[in-house]
Length: 138
Length: 279
Image (cartoon, rainbow over all chains, first blue to last red; front, side, top):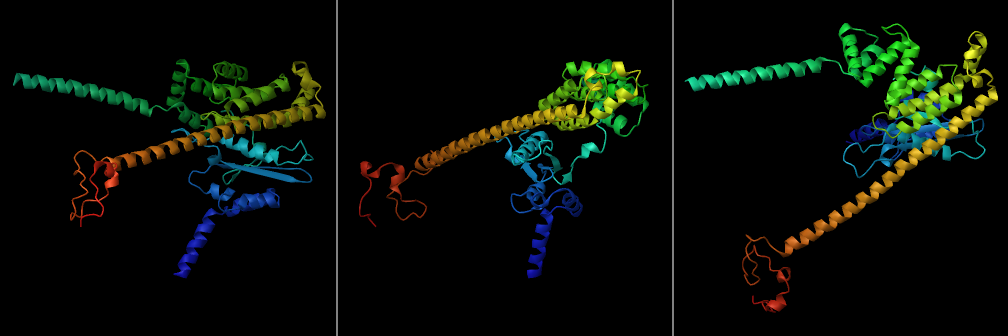
């Protein structure tokens, strides 16, 4: 019985953890505190929201030569409580909140040429993806 | 018998009409819509004759999505021979009709040209970023526009070099691009980032405000509903339905009767309540 309970706990905890390759990629880019924040799977943390049904959570990050900052936002913080259909915010709105939080976390000495950029949407790391391929017509 | 035959004829005619309608509907179902067509042509690079006919039909009927797709095909020389200036004018016309994708496409086409003032192009891109951030259908264009702006500022130096390399087309280059320096590019880039930062803050604040207001309204609504339900419960408990057994506090010995005289008004005034109770 105890073993079953232990397995169940392991299953629940591992279910909310970031997948291995995502962790590895994140570890290569993010500095310690932000990395911890990104992989944190406690209640109300980034991974907790990233593992919800139909998740919409965004992580933003910036670093200069001496420091780094990050910010996140999830759709529940921006949902319209008085509507019946289409109450969820757009990705751009969630991104805007995460990026604004990241920007406001910067110290005055932070390099102004290093803006906060999108690091991940849910567990999909999109850090500087736009640099890798040409913009496409829509 | 004749009457019966007439009914059958009528029913047959109705059935034929129904089959015809069904055929028409099924034909439309088989025809690809623009989004599907776009995927087949742009992502899978498959050009089937029925699809091209569908595209032509769409262009003739002034379908904006089909026209935009035609513009993309012209710009990249897909199936049709390449004609970038015609494609740009298609994007421009559709942009003036407020077609979101065409506005992005027009901006993208402008980022590849050397005869455009970078300040104007950046302005256009920032505008698209801000305009579509809150648009449920086209918000993805907002994110794409933000990235396009960054990519464009990073490509300014190579555009300048392109101007300098080709002496024949040097005069056609925009004067700003002809003489742009690394400091100028830094300046344009930081102005763009400032604009994006400000826009982001406005977009986030608007939505946070909406969320807070709607939460307050929802809380008020829930409170009103709770009070309403409570009041209803109290009133329905005080006044039993018409078909219910009349309350009789003196009907002792009946286990189904709840002997609570206070629920039927003040029993002291009715002079019905006696103390001590006559057991």
